[in-house]
Amino acid sequence: MTLFIGVATSTLVLDLLGRAIFSPLPAGVLFDYFLLSLLLTGGTRFALRSLYQHRLMKDKPRVLIYGAGSAGCKLVASLRQGSDYLPVAFVDDWRGMEGTHVEGLEVHSPRHIAELVERLNIEKILLAIPSARRRRRQEIVASLDPLNITIQTIPRLDDVVQGRAKIEDIRDVSVEELLGRDPVPPRQDLMDANIRDQVVMVTGAGGSIGSELCRQILAQRPRQLLLFDSCEYSLYQIEQELLGFLDSLSLAVELKPFLGTIQDQKRLRIILQGFKVDTIYHAAAYKHVPMVEHNMVESLKNNTFGTLAAARAAIDSGVSTFVLISSDKAVRPTNVMGTSKRLAELVCQALAEQSSTTRFCMVRFGNVLGSSGSVIPLFRRQIQQGGPVTVTHPEITRYFMTIPEAAQLVIQAGAMGQGGDVFVLDMGQPVKILDLARQMIRLSGLEPRTADNPHGEIDIVFTQLRPGEKLYEELLIGQNDQPSEHPRIMTANEGYWSWSQLAPYLEQLRSALDSAELERVRELLRLPPTGYSPTGGIADLVWRQHMAQPASPTRRLAGAADPNPAPLALAAKPL
Image (tube, rainbow, N blue to C red; front, side, top):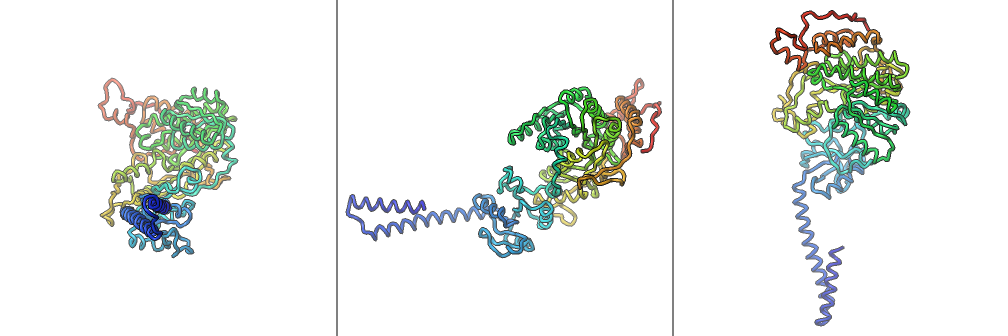
């Protein structure tokens, strides 16, 4: 249109000049001028544009769009405006669309993907199915896995609707999407029960689970949310994120960040009483298995005796509900981390019998996707560096759950507790870590190097099980689990010790930790309350360093065995 107006204007000017200087030009001359100018100018522009677009398209990666719905159409329109990709065809599993054309591209059946990839020189497949359920996305990606081609996706529908992303924001398919599952809609009455218009504290607020608990809690509109963490940076990060969340939603919730250690019972009591806390979600813990093995004393003090300090402070302050975040590693533990969490469970169960004011419950679950100690960030980093990807054992398996689902279930389980309950989350099916490593490599557009595929780009190397590491994890000590009012939360009916039984045991354990008598600590941990069955020797770094040095003739090294140890005064009683 602009070209037409320009040529018409120049023709008019030519006519006016002719009239002013010479005599009026013949109409035929003016018409010929107009037509030739339009053809020459427009044709030149069209030719240049076509040449430019051809060169651009020639250099663009050729992509196949999986999903010919409205999202796929918007994606194609967006890609044609940019210079990143060249869409060449659609694939859609609705039979009625096969053979039709959408946005000028033919729609094919998924049955023909392998042939299309080869015939059309497809370099990437873009998933344009934002509303598809997680299970369906997993099935589609699994079907594309043998093609050895990069798979990317547009954001999920809820992210687009809530303005967190745009349709054209193409990203890699994350392994978290493939391992996760469609969550069960939460029961709002359970989400509100311990939170709405109440004062809530989260210990370990800056950690993976603690920070997600804070996000979920804030959405339920407590009166105040107290963030407690020992790491200044983590506490600052989650506080700033939550302040932004409050501002965007105009929520009137007070945030209070507190630095401190959960072992400081006096400080906890001052905070709890000063702010009249109603509910505590106790997520603070050292959780990385090898790190805990190497720092045995501090880990037991933090995970077990820190829980004891927090629980006693809660009772002293009249806190209504105390929810302990436990671990599947607490079941028949083979490592110190799991043992420390089992002892924390026993502490809460024993105190639940004594307390008439504070309701204690524990929530036990497995690995969460994306946590700081998860294997997934490690694999992702190793792949980015070109390998190798390290797997400790070819048969090792783990349970996985997304952090948001775990936090949501923890909140609902905490609302169902009557006192001393151990809740176990349904983790779905265990995942073989070797299969996970292979899948992550393929999602990166690469191939694992194997005996059958020597030309693969990434090696997978088997190391060995680390100190305290199991081949597989369990969620129940016995087989007496009972369903709860939530389909993904079970109740474990397990034995425990009363406080009169547990107290002398804890006193001896604390004494042994304070004097760094780790052989005695280990002996105590192996008694019936925990079921601890270590798979190797003591791995504590300080203890090993002392043991490697020559013994002094004048003093016994901290952590070395006492030649005349006091007998264990505790008579172990069966659970």
